[in-house]
Length: 357
Image (cartoon, rainbow, N blue to C red; front, side, top):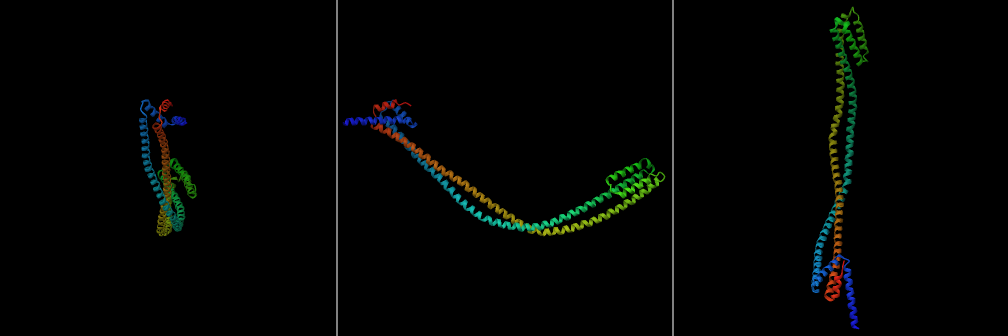
């Protein structure tokens, strides 16, 4: 009975070992173990040699695991330290942001007060400038009217002097040339100064006198004298109008200077208020920039901390997977060692040698 039980146990052990080796074909490491054992058996090495080789593989795996444990520990310590440093920076950044946010409303209120004071002073200054602008516009109209009148008088003088030159050069032959030139000159003048009716009437009368053959030479001489008198009169009118315009200019400049003087008195206050307003604006900008900077630091460091935390998690996960894989490999090696140390026989050897992939 005991023999039968022993045979059954041996058969069961043999079947379990064959199943074990058959399962090894499903993994790359298992294939490597089987191929390594097959090489050793093919060279007729004893079971002790195979066991020695398997134990060496076991030691190598254990050494790899210890080395990796140390490397992973260092890596985890490094990323945990980096994560803690990022968290510390985030704490400081949040405190600085809160401080800046508390200062901002106070600075903005002070700046608004300075702005209102500045606007009041600038409004007063602008009203003075507007009055100057009104005065300037009125003066421009006066100057334009004066210049137009002056240009007309200059045109009259030029026309009279040209007419005088024509008469002076052509007294002996008025019928043939000078009269025609004079009439043409009058038509051109009429084109540029159509509203000088009195002047044109006088010229027409003189032209009619000049067309009388019997009196044309003496009439021409009289006309030349009349022209000289007219030119002198126009020069006198020019002087009087220039004097009147100078008076208007003086009155304009006096009023303008009074307003400019008032504005110069405002310049000091405006400059001081504006300087303070700009300083406050710069401080507000700096505080806003600091808030934005701390926001950026918080965001960047939060991302960095998340990355380091993820790195730690990934490292631990990868290490667990690698450890589990090595433990599985160690279990295979330990099982193989047990088989070769306790129950390796010719049937097991034959079965291992027949395994194909």
